Image 1 (cartoon, rainbow, N blue to C red):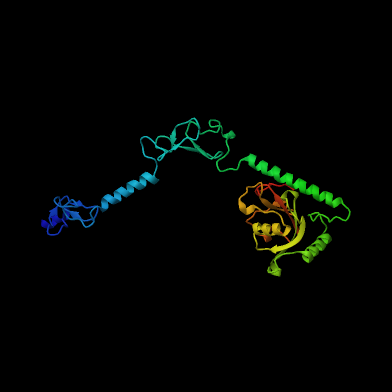
Image 2 (image 1 turned 45 degrees about the vertical axis):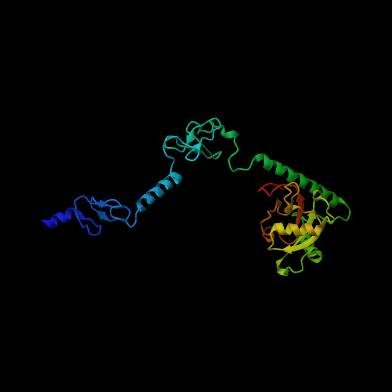
Length: 295
């Protein structure tokens, strides 16, 4: 009979008690079982006193911070307001869901979720570059290149003028040009011969104070375009204020004639340039936006 009773309840695990309790209590801090008299942490002198309360408090704080907004009056810390300028509805709550517009990259309430309701066609998508800025940069680049091509055209029509080293030049002329570039090129003699990149470099009129308008130079293929630009400006004695933070209006850029594009400062010189190619130093044409210059 006693054995059957023991299978129903459990003995109190407090020292010197060991009382059989048919409805034992489990301490959530130390995970032991106790009788009615020793159920509290104070009564059984719990070695992990406060552990259960601390874990519950931490879980509550985590839920409030990272979990969905709680019910009740929303605040800027627990909800997001509809992106419509005249709407004061808080979204992403239990009572009001938010709908993301894939066109303008904004979130709206159910009332303003449609493009017609929030004038989506007139908004600039969040994170997108304004089209007006791209157009301004394109016009600057085209204007600078137009001036440069006019200068080259006039020089080409003069008796004894050197021909433009472009993509339309015949192969035999290109071989002669490369040989001429190698023979007269200037550069750092410490650059290994197998690492040298031979280029014909010109400075457009807008670069100002260029004492040497053109010349043949060689650079290291492993250099970045930015470092090559610094050396090219130094070789042509062109004013270079790229490192002074003067803005795009005064910044020099490298235009690759054969490739028909502005080179990024971070790309390797040997990745897009070949021996005998022509580069032009242009000022104030804006960043190297993809498809900015159509040649």
